[in-house]
Image (cartoon, rainbow, N blue to C red):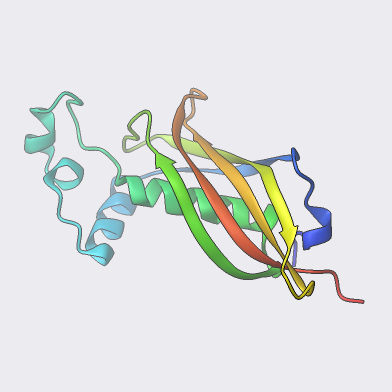
Length: 149
């Protein structure tokens, strides 16, 4: 268990997630298949070649999901009760096959639950490509365990 308990999160704390991942064509294809998203911009090279991007884009939900996965060891691994929400998602730049993404989370809010037994933590997650360009960002709100007595 490497995640943080509610008491260990501090507003303003920035957590850089060291692991990154290079996204393959297969990753994107499998995610689209599993989610039944057959958008040709993600899957059809000829179609995507005629767009402003000139090639297929990685599914934005995969980029977001991968960022959450990359952040878990440093934030919520074994210390989460539930993910409560994902808000204000944006994709300012596209992600392509072969891009390597990494993420960082900044704690923006925290409060105890009304019964005082757990805590709600909100973090701003930023996702960058290999050139350190911002490709995705969102708010993630979690229900966190408190440290055992």
